Length: 125
Image 1 (cartoon, one colour):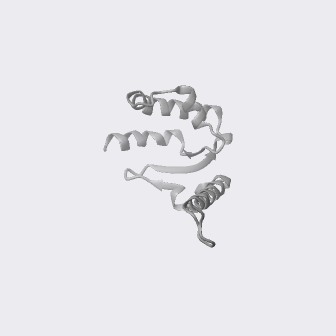
Image 2 (image 1 turned 60 degrees about the horizontal axis):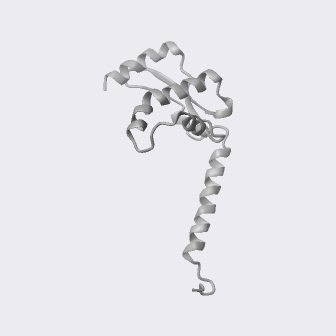
Image 3 (image 1 turned 30 degrees about the vertical axis):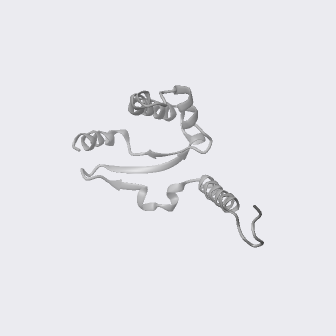
């Protein structure tokens, strides 16, 4: 069935939405620091007065130590859940996903001595 002249078909509407969505994703991925648009999210004080300072870091800017910590954190927190799901746990696939070129991480730059307060926050819930 041909579309009437001037009438946009469903397929054309979907294609247009896909192009618009890709443009938005590309724009977001091009930001050097996505948190620069959200100053109020860069630092905050928790209910127990622990202070946190966040930066946004692209995968290419992460140190090998931090990247290793991210993998370890993901595995410790999620491996069991993945194993219980129909997806299963695939370490190499997960590492590939976590290191995609567009990956960006919010990193707490608070000094490690301040992290002790975080344990209390988590345990007190």
